[in-house]
Length: 442
Image (cartoon, rainbow, N blue to C red):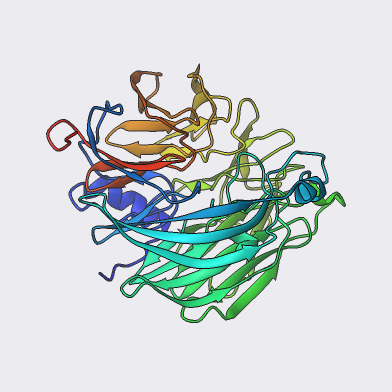
């Protein structure tokens, strides 16, 4: 099915005005990349024996989210051969002294699953990778979420490889390996703009944005990131996913990185504006946009939530930053903006709600658990998935109201997905389709 890629604002408004026409889920955080679904009737309560339509084992491990269109689910994963003791000693720490996970080899996979039945339709091997870079214990070898569009699946595994797959025949049409030193493994998901695949390449050794021709994987453009104040390699890396927005008819790719958040012209890679957000590095959250501000989280050091007006040109640090918040801001989960409210859940389980105009905090609540997955909005509810396998459902609004807590076996690191009015949740071992009482069966 051919469908048009909307800008973030168009998709946001569409979700408000056309509740019956549910869109596919083609990329990280859904149609507009911001974790918003226009579906209604999503399940509120579930467990391993209640409201589970099906539960399917997942091949290998991966923290990437599923993508969905035309009744098919696609997800990436990796299997590994354990490293030797010598390999673990040689590669088991990063320059900052952090302990890392090491593999001797990995195999990269794509799985196709039937949305109705949960049946595994195809398991497609993409590549074997010898001596892969080590990863953070909370990361995986398949963390970036793929992009699905017009019979093609674009899978990005950072340094381990980028692949274009024909979803009808299951054949790899092209592949490319972009060498970059992540230090803790890949994290940035790709973005498809028209006929360009845009990749964030913020490593310790180099920092740039790269656009490939989607048809054959050849380079369309490459733009270096702005200069950084630090010479420490570990402080130069980042992992944010681009967000496509449109300002007064002009498309922009907003891509935070270490020290800077930059907007680029997607067709050429030319810089439009930049904001110096400080000393933050290892930015993982995807930015969000509400028609007034772009909101970013600034990563490690002292994470801040920053509201930026994206209508400037050049360095707009002193003119277009309207407010900042610096307490209990997430390092990993992306924020969620809806209406005039922005919601966050930080890595330690503290949820907050802010007024988008003033930045005033409306409420704060410790809900418990550890969080990596980004939140989901649907039908006036917000779904928050913890690493411990618990999904807390709260009401969207100016006061904290918990509606339900739902537990599954295994870890929830991948962000939740909506398909045909149901939830898709990926744990470290299984993919679940969760529905309400009328549609689910044991």
